[in-house]
Length: 587
Image 1 (cartoon, helix red, strand yellow):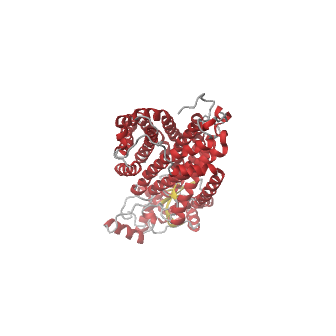
Image 2 (spheres, helix red, strand yellow; image 1 turned 90 degrees about the vertical axis):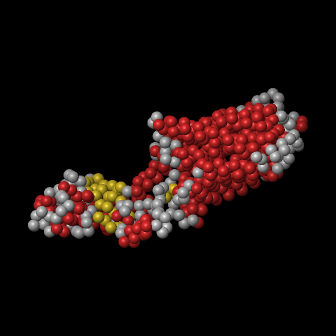
């Protein structure tokens, strides 16, 4: 996975830069940071830090993707400053001052979002926060030290064979899009909202699915042949059963009628197949009266040896049936178990997971009818259903904490209380829309029974954190340009120069998640990788570069309220804007 991701990013960077050294310089700090982070996190794990099973997988994708993004932020600005007439060393210094704030704030949003996972109750989420946050901290240090040093050392040679010399800025296709955008911001925003709202409606069809999935043996193997025979001739409960438990006030050998009532209620519910319990443990049925008599004759069934009946008064078949019941009866006779399979499907299926509420209702009914004092179900489907519920709870619990923390950081970076509001709304919009597209592709079109329940949570955390990365880059550049240009010109200029950076970074990040989808082993991992890639692409090409700038133009000076920029409207001759935050307009 790690090697495949590195190769993919290098090939994509070669296409972006059309240079030999620039891709290597961009990716090298991320690779170093990944190696250092893995060693450091491993050391923390050896000293007691809980580390999730999927930490290493997500760490590779996150650090290579985000590290490359931060490299692109800086390298694109360095190239722009060299073309603007600065020497390579001055270009690196100037770019680090300008973009360094954006990179630091971007990494800060990711770290904050990851650390909010500490508030999650689900262990997988909770144990992801610290390791991934540590990794992002390492990549930030590498991006602000190693990367600028490499750019200063290689200078223009970093972009060879392309020639980067002082020249008149050219209006690329993002510049042309930006000019049209600022002319009709209301139309752009309205169309975008309609499209995203339409895509978001598909999220209403989201269904939670299992996480483990079934593991199939290679086609044509002896194991595959054996599995096929078992599936054809034996019930699901023999290989992966669900266990139903009941606790009574009277031992079964005193009054088995209550157990018989529970079994009859379960069988009539229509939720189960192949129900096996104390009264039919090995396929032979024992009546309640026979069970009481056998207990008086033989004692506790769990203590009987696997031999024929030592008593001539007990037939062998009854002896074996009674002895087998011991696996379903506790030593005190008060707790009784049944093994069964769900009629909805096997324990690993999404249908079984979704049937758990009905199954539990049937068990509760059986407990009431048989006067059991406690009841429950155990098995893979029930466990996954509860984990899915915990995941949904964590999403609702962590969501406001992450929103508040990142909103405060955006307010500090942009010196505004208004901008963070619509920036966070834009991320929420892209999140719901991406979930809707994933639902459309995998459930409505692909026919899957459901998406893995961890997808909405991971999609929220990563899109919130990484989406704000691009927000910060675009908005800080708009703020910078607004200090010397009228707002519409500033937005057009900022989108024109940051558009290639954001789209390139988005392609790299989406591509790394795409690698996860392709090489992650299929099933739910594919859903996670593809879902995150879809969300990042939508966020990159539509939200950050179109809807957010359109909103900036519509709000005008209110974007910067309550800072002094919101009260500054003086534009001198020549189009240079005087901002009261700085007495002179300097680049």
